[in-house]
Image 1: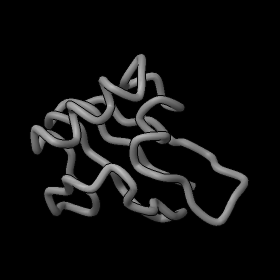
Image 2: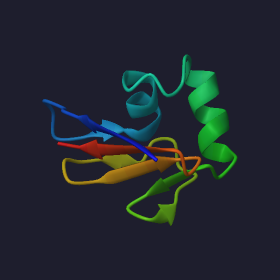
Image 3: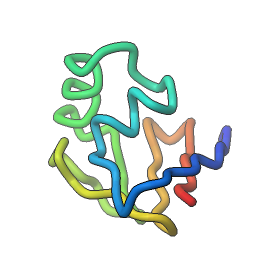
Image 4: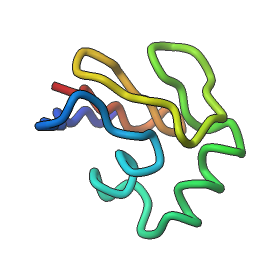
Length: 71
């Protein structure tokens, strides 16, 4: 599994925006599809809410291949 640390300068970032910011998804539509397909886990729980607020300390896994550690 590939891990990447993502630093944000705000209180939170929405899940779909994080996927675009981390170059996991090229577009918002692609991010929406990945999330709605159940391929995303936030802190080891499947998440299908694209507007989920991701805060520093959260771990986002995509397809069991990519882990994003938000700082």
